Image (tube, rainbow, N blue to C red; front, side):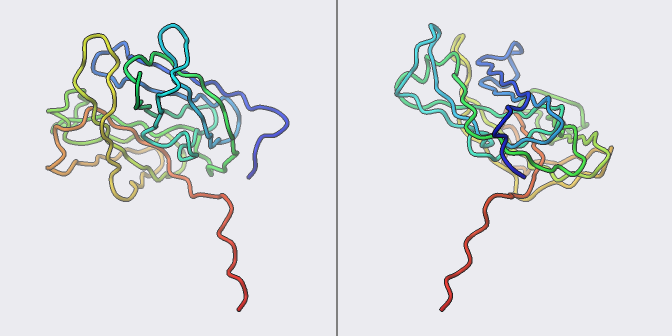
Length: 218
């Protein structure tokens, strides 16, 4: 494990303020990892308006935590997170400046593809309609089993042509274990059905940062 200090890995980051599909999530950030190793990024964001001017009073948050090392990108694959904006000028955000603050190499034990997650209805058909969103279909295309975290995202109602803001997110308790080359279905609790508009799933990797210091001898 370690940081890339001498040579930057082949990484690209793309922000999409408004999805082309009106039912798809807005404010997404996608990190593409074209290296041969798994990566745990820590990204920093500066919000800018349609004219490229910085919005100093706008705070940028993330749903999954790509700004604090909580998201990993398998080699040759992408990792996706959703941004949300707060403060004076938040409605004017149309782009973000991205700074890679850290990029840690992680051992994913053979994982080379991200988990695929789709909203499904009662008949296990893919849907983008929140009223039909009763479960989550998860697909593991890797040759190894994976543990997956699942987060539901709620968006505000559309406001004209403005990108929709994420107003709430709930991560399901525990993780979902998926065998190699297989799929799983997770049904939502009744009290959250119809409330959320999107789902994010990510491969869970144990934290490998510095351990807590040993206690001082007595």
